[in-house]
Length: 433
Image 1: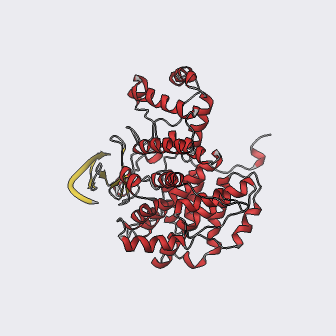
Image 2: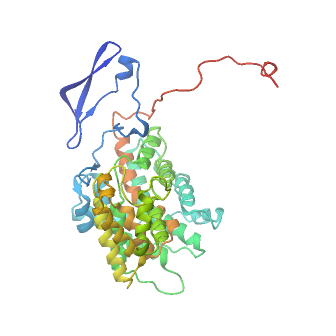
Image 3: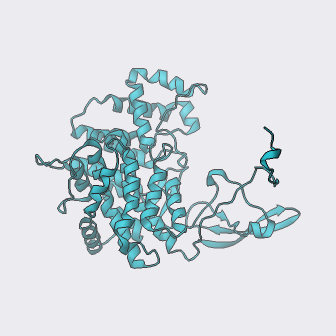
């Protein structure tokens, strides 16, 4: 980020304040208000930080108006179509796509560190069988810091590297164990002869009593889902990871904090909500009734999976996810899936109906990912776990960037206080009965 000669002039309390204008490589310029309080004894008010750049980053760029998502400059469509998740992980962590030797070294390192400490397998028995998988994920990922003391010193670049690779390698194992525990099946250990996505599917769906062969079409779909969810700029969970990391917390605790934030239905639970909505509609014949309900401001019904806080155009990930959903259903022989029929019809309405077009309520990635994950065999309670697994690499990349930033400071948002002014303590005897 470079400072321009241009300044923004603010008139405050009879004084003229000059605020530097800083320019990124692409995207809107920003006004640097870091000296505002020192000069004017005043803060800005921005609930949700929707107009505030909390950091400088080189990792992910989104243009919501144009429907653009770039990882380190590469369009998400190209990465999902031509690359794979391991390559995307390397890109997010190190800034460039790997060459052949770099790819082999990185993939080997991830593949050979997928096992977790054996004592952790007994950690799961402390949870109730009916515990939500995300509750188990928060606890077990946070517990990694109790097992891997040799990679918690954030000031040691080598330890940061080890912790980063450990989490990318071990999160699929933890997620699969979480699923197996929830359905009462024995844990399946990782296999070094399988790819990242294939290994995850094997750990989730293999059983000891019979061989399980991973379907390459389904593995490719799983890999694509991971790639599409790998990072998404300064969203709520990423900002949580950065904020936790700014205090100097160990990386495992920071990722656990991100998982906890992702658990919120307004963030990571959106694809689950979209699937539940499609199930409620049930059949294409019921769509007109539900469209009318969605347009009625007095009706509590809302169409889930439409629109996005950032994208004011078509979510570029949704196009890839739509294609992936069709490939999975075709491979599994699901030709007449009522939920997909409803989804396709709703999409066409959203792209043509004046009500949706004016409000730019285009289908987002959650609209199709829920159907795809259901077809792969996952229950809705696992959807956010899969989101967390995919997003881990993005969180780690953002955390590392923050730690290595020489201008990094502990996060400390300010507030507009609207409570009581100062008042004196009153003894109980004078407070009345």
